[in-house]
Length: 252
Ligand SMILES: C[S@@+](CC[C@H](N)C(=O)[O-])C[C@H]1O[C@@H](n2cnc3c(N)ncnc32)[C@H](O)[C@@H]1O
Image: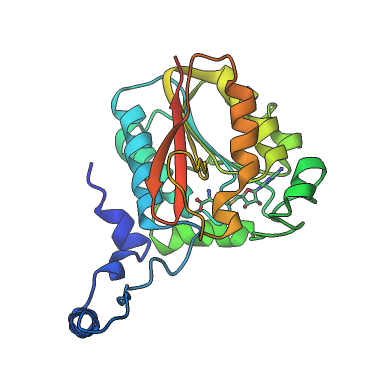
């Protein structure tokens, strides 16, 4: 399966430097300024092309290998990442169902550790079900008639609305409380060999990004994840994603 659709559908192809970018950069090299022009990395959605490529490779691998179970995305926001997962399911594993989860009202009111971390306010990242479906329409991607879009707080939809067996999961809830609540339920339903990718997993001992914005580090995710994996056989690996950092583990 090719991955060119990511650049085309998600409008990321314009990261290609144009001739005038190259010309200006050539001139800039003669100055003492350590700068160059870089095309914008995205126009819509919540991540960059590196993160989308990471998602593509991990999810398509589970589909190609026939890891039993469905494909789930916890924290789907406006559907950009869901489009990638649905296209993989339609192309490589039409027998698998997809399940998408979000409040579509953005983050819940931060409490406890999330309140101390001060990364998100209630309603940050709010979108709508209309926008989610509209993004599928824009790329002309059919959603199965029985698409499983679970609108609500994770604390209400999970675990009750999770499929019994999971082949691939994208956990992208950004908050400590959301990750803490969801991860044990995902883990217990993942098949052997299944992969769970984290939309953010910032580990400064592996890849330090001191100048990146706090939301791209979302430290609560790593805290909740590390607490969960303490004493477990699996280990979370870091994946480069430009200004973001993704992570993943494979269930043993
Ligand atoms: C970073 S966004 C997801 C981005 C998306 N996966 C992508 O890559 O385009 C995080 C999402 O998690 C949702 N979220 C976080 N905590 C939640 C909770 N406890 N219940 C429901 N939704 C939650 C937010 O509404 C937000 O849309």
